[in-house]
Length: 443
Image (cartoon, rainbow, N blue to C red; front, side, top):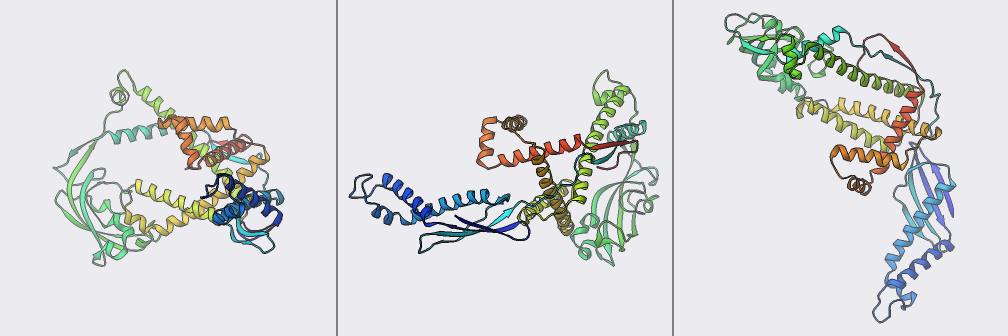
């Protein structure tokens, strides 16, 4: 069997195969003989029809089966002959039976990239200590106060700092509606009804709430805001916007006392503020530990991203970019962004998705390479136990879930995910971790 592999750019290669006539004839005879045993031909007893009749009657089916067997046999042989890791064999084309009886075809292979690993044991990782200060706990308690606060109407005075205003507003730029001038990306700022706003400097837009202080219910006012050049929404940078506001209601926030009664309201009878503080500390430490674990992984990923460069398969990059874009859109929608606002941020979302996709794919290949070098594997028992745990969380029958995953071809992906996690655990186990006393930055 004559096999040649010609490498191209971006992890692609052209595989060309010529199968000798003897192999073709051998496969053909096997297939024709099998048809002869099973075929029902009018005028002939089962299994007694001449091979020439069988071959003529089923020539198209026989030809397709010969091609399929020879292609599969050739692809398996190519893996033995050439030291390449094939991710996808592509769609064979230029299928030809020559006059000499040989069979030829070619296909475009997608190859795993060649990864040269840097030193991966003892990677320096710096994370904050998992400590919770009294200030941290008090901040959480203040948040709980805000969450369970009551509100009373203010009728005997004007708006003051710390109050809440319920307002209606519209906005214009150069006398025209904001959304009409700047597009859907600014929908949130175009107008609202019944909009609750706390009278503090960092609410809504810089300079907006101070302009409302001193107004009473029923008052109207135009508030002019000049946005800075670094405003997050590019369409609004350096723009002068006029907000036409009507004060509907004034509210005063009434915070609950931080006492045992408050703790019992949240946690049940016989609980105290000490119990509530302890619960907050435990929860914050748990959350911080997750952040710290994420920081360790992020630093490992950043290390490899800086140390290792290689091409990645374009098809994988496109698919992962789409996955990341879908996830970003879903996250934006869940955070309250409208379809128009998401559309307005389309280019930024795609850029972010593409960058994350590249990092994900590179990291995946690097971790697989480390797993191979360190003989890290996921055995069948680990795989089955993981699927059983998924079934238990979903309250499904494990055997049915396994069959479903097999039917949909998801088992290899799950095994690979487990392998990646084991490789990460290996790196974390061998990392050089330094704890600092600094406040935990955002993970």
